[in-house]
Image (cartoon, rainbow, N blue to C red):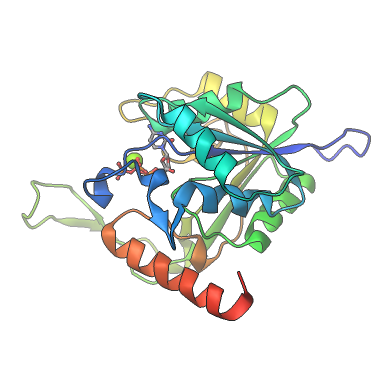
Length: 250
Ligand code: CTP
Ligand code: MG
């Protein structure tokens, strides 16, 4: 809650331990380059650009020497000096990776942003508006955008077979949710302790907090905060980066 006497120190945790299966064969997704720079470095810079963020925890792939490789990449690239950076190994699921990042946070952190390495181009204004909503007292904040497509709920069947449509939610009430998601740290820690998620684990941190019965609020997201998931997303990311470099000496 926004208790003025309490010092607010905000950290960002960047889960970057995924393989990037949907992107096709190659290096782990976070280590692939955009405009010649690893996606992970773009994501760290996007967090460090916010003056509110004084610590970034990068969650690296758990295998081999990925932690050392990530450390080396961070040392090679220019990053703001006021930002402290830690690297920890991740887990088999995104939820486990986020948990590993939370476990690495020092005791003076009160608020945390969880940001996908796979969203390298999120603008600093989006990051700042999430931080601001948390500082104003929200326990959980998601950046979100209205949908372009109508969404249907179906009864899932075998791939490629026609599937019966069971519902059409009113589009104006739907939002596509992005990261960074912002949290009161104690609330997110509680969710990780109390909420059991089967199978592949939670892919949405705010969803775990919702299950505690805590109100999650949405603030405006940004189209450039899209997630690099499939090969076509790389084409779009390169185009966004090229436009930025041409227009704002990025
Ligand atoms: N992630 C993670 N640990 C995992 C799985 C995912 O830290 N065990 C991270 C990814 O590195 C990514 C973010 O969670 O930054 C969002 O996940 P997603 O886009 O699904 O990335 P991947 O899991 O790498 O991709 P895919 O599902 O296509 O394999
Ligand atoms: Mg995944």
